[in-house]
Amino acid sequence: MGYLQRHKEKLFAEITTIPEIVRGSYFPALDGLRGVAVMMVILYHFGANRFLRPFHILINGDMGVDIFFVISGFLITTLLLKERVIYGRVSLKRFYIRRAFRIIPAAYLFLIVMIILALFFKYGVSASDFIASFLFYKNLPYWEEPYMGHFWSLAAEVQFYLIFPFLLTLNVNRYLVIIGSIVLVMPLISIMGYYHADFLFSNHFIQMITKITMYTFWKGPFIILIGSLFAVLLFKGVIKIKKQGGNYLLSFILLIIAITISSTSFTFYTKYASEYLSAILIGWVILLNLGKRNLLSAVLGSQVLVKIGVISYSLYLWQQLFIGNRFRLQWVTHLHTTLPAVLILIKLASLFMIAFASYYFVEMRFLKIKYKYEPGGKPKSL
Image (tube, rainbow, N blue to C red):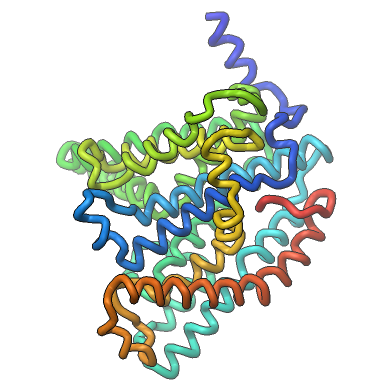
């Protein structure tokens, strides 16, 4: 009882200090983890699995997005809690300005280019698709076109920004109860709805709630909340991670397990449960690589992965032009006869050139403005 009582007291105690492992302003390993995540999405969309299938290895692009989500939830919440501890309050105005400068410029550039391409090449993208993308509600259930389908994840991010930071600034303990309840209850409802649909769907109201919950699990900010919960528990002292020491291989093993169990090719894959557990493992991977020296942090801290992670947002935006086994862009259809492996390399080269241009000529300009609104005016790992 003494152990439970101590943890209960920690859960509802005021946050007055910043944990040692998040006192820095930049975490290279997390940029490296972003690099891993975006490459999983890209290789999945570019058809790399056709070469891996004979080895019974499949890349799960959805897992790459989940890694992004967990990192985002953890870092956003960490930044807000640090601001609260240092300055005694959180400026939501400055927070939303920072997020707008981070998300909107590159996203709108992509959409403007898509409008131009649609006008010239008649891609069949409707006005409603563009509106849903511009206003960040692309994750709401309706027919998805391929060119801007990836904006569902940006919509989930923006919806998280609009609701949960506001709740966090009102009352941290209440916020913890709300997101803790969501993180515990939503997977149970989704699993029950998937495996016991006949029982649950006998009641119309329960059927509606279950379907909404199951859809939100995939297309809403649920996974982001797992990262946010890890941050709150870290600041509360419920989770304690030493900056130095620990198992040298542990976080590397956890990452491999997380990626493996989320794959539909995994023997014991269980819908919803596998994604839920893998997201929790990613939360632990993040904690174990904040300024610590281990095998995975050494890999993630490599210059190549860190640089890929830095431009990962632009990579994620522009990779949509190249997904599939062929080129969608009409002026390069003559490349369809190219060997599949060569085609993937051409796509990768094209994507990285566009992403570098997008990052250095658009993102960086607005990031410099964004930094002026950071607490203390210094760049963050966000």
